[in-house]
Length: 622
Image 1 (cartoon, rainbow, N blue to C red):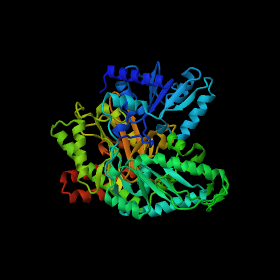
Image 2: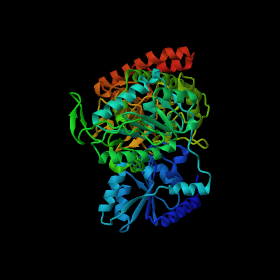
Image 3: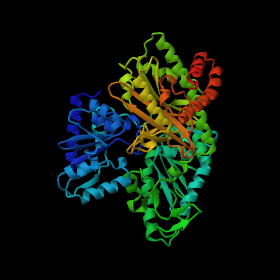
């Protein structure tokens, strides 16, 4: 942990660099150059300067103040971790301005606000720049190409290098669609729109597009890369160290050119020159092969007038443009490199396509949850036994046992996030993670909350169960039952005055890619391999003094029926059945029947009689 003196020293050094560059404020977002919320160690700049390690937030430093914005998931953590000289700004409270609004009101006239242009989306930089210029202070947004935090970090200690872990091909056995087919679909869309191409920067989109996976970010099977896809060419920019011969051959076979990760900037610069010429001479239709050292192809198909809408099907309208398409989170630096006048910010075509899973992905998604359910049943049965036998287990060590059971399952690739193993009052802390040293001992007479997930080749899981291994109080049973009712969604008692999926979160789930936690008025998690098929429902309640409750599961086709995919019992002994309606009882009984039918035989296969008996008891009807 950073000491108070270290924290102040870093702020002092940063302010010196700010003076050297004539800027009055410096913004340090949490995200990396690919808008990833979960980071490789080399990109944890906001954590380095603030000492706050939560996954979301933004730091703003002026010559007299240092403030850190974060949402309600991390207020308690931030209050504990923020170094000397820092002020916590609790995002979401009505009296707390956004960091952009705060800068507009607090900066002196004609101030210059600096930011690394790779760390802010083009759309956000445009809005912020306009807002600052129009403000009474007439301030400006200034791109600082050399990251100031990196300078301080490198001087103080060796900064972690960017990972270059091995990339591997995920076959159509798991993806259900070849890279050739995906590229073809995207090109068809580009032609309909009239765009010469698209720049892909989101790591999850790149993994989905190329059917490749990596291990560059903890818990996320993605790799550092960029991609440019035109109507004629496709180039992947990734570290040569990450590319095995089989992956190179696979990409070459599918007509995908390879360049080093850092070559993206040269390629975009070359493309900018051609685009500028072509846009100034729309009658010229370039053709010819592309020199990949200079960037993507200069081939340009005929386009219709920008802004014209064309019916491409009964249900689809396409807004035309002759500009390069970039996604909503593509950085300001990328837009500047290819020319801000040459790009148009839209929802990514890839995001649109991967938002609906194919039959193979859906089936893998279901099967991965069944395998995960086996591990969970074995874990909870084990925990019940050891606690009843008087053994003492810490939250951290218990989580390792769950990981062990998951590892024994087919196609396990790792955890999808750090397991939240929490007892008593710790369960009330959103995104609590038990420390390796000094984590609490699990108390069988208190509530235990376990929020965990795994990466399998055919799917990603995320499930939460709250249990009591002793005798729950009436208050605990009543609270648990109200949360359960909100989860079931057949009553508005637990979610009064709000739509059901605004209670704590509605999370879209994808197949084998990453978990991204976001926050737009509610907590959301995005599994970026697509789907409108699977939606994660979270309902939780917590009291900071006593306990926390969370019931989280996966629902298939929520909008057309809602079939639970997550396969783990909801503890009957915590349910006050007198509070449940007949419909709610039917839902719970039917769900438990399905869990027992799918998980029970698999527990027999692994000869875990203890877990089978536990499952049989927990799936009984009420």
